[in-house]
Length: 436
Image 1 (cartoon, rainbow, N blue to C red):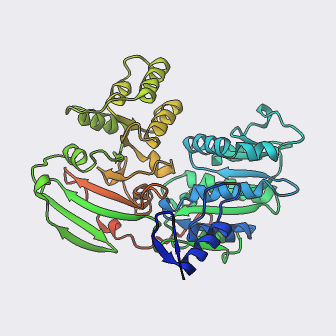
Image 2 (tube, rainbow, N blue to C red):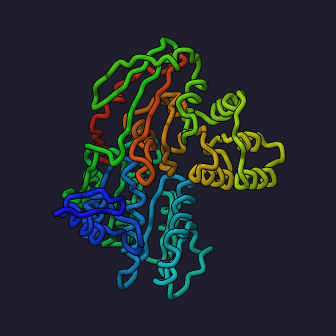
């Protein structure tokens, strides 16, 4: 027996039953039209049934979506418990807290929860009938732990947990210390780790003497298809990398006359959403200005002009970002005021502007999925990419709710790419050695 959908296309009856069943069981808590993918549902179920858990997956899997869905479930617990979301940067504090306040506002009001980002308890007016979701960096969590009479922490969720394995970053020790001290101060705290592209996420549980069997790794495939290309502007050569295999491609006639990276981005990314990675902030400004040197037919809408007005009043009428926005281009880096970054991110997500030149803020987990990502350097400032950073950045290509395919273009225009082994996307094993 067969069933017909709204387009009169016939589908097998058993498939229709399976689809209806998934809509019942895989419905996101407290949502009307959101449903987990199979892998998301599997992860959410395991996460919900554990008091300690570690999971990893590609950026496109929607890990922050899983975390927020988990919070929706946790805040209904009785008695209520306070939650800490531990993020690596202040930019992520801002992004995560805004997302929570926007998306979960009704639930927070119903169950008497508030979102707080300040670790100084003297600045927090604690109310008897409220519980709290704290979004903190490791430094702010340590400040919170050092104070007396702080509300007890019931859940600690560590986002971007792979930072624990970054041997060259002293902040990894700070992260480790904040988690360890939380365990000691609040016995029985429930502990969770989220990380990108790590084949052995159980390592984080072992690090804190937790049950390593409670882990989930989704590194073998991505929920969106990602096409990786290495484009050598100098030698007019294009290679595609698929499942660790290098494939030489013929350059189309339309691309044979391209002589620089900006021309390539304009030609390939025309009328699409493009993130262009540069390895330091001055370069984002330089490349963005090169991009608008050629005439464009972009016409800013009311939202863009409102953003121009707000930035002009906030910084200066002649601030050069405003001229870029009028032409559909922006830059995004960690030195920008947070309010300006918020404006750029919002315009890009709504597709009011379609080209953003950015630095490693995206490596820190800033949520800006895109159709195309163009990588102009294989370094984070002066440090060469390692595999996990490269794929964490590349994972922004493809948007699960909009299109199931994204493109990554690594562009060589000055002999800057030495290490192409990172393209092979082998499973990434972390071996943190802190205090071992």
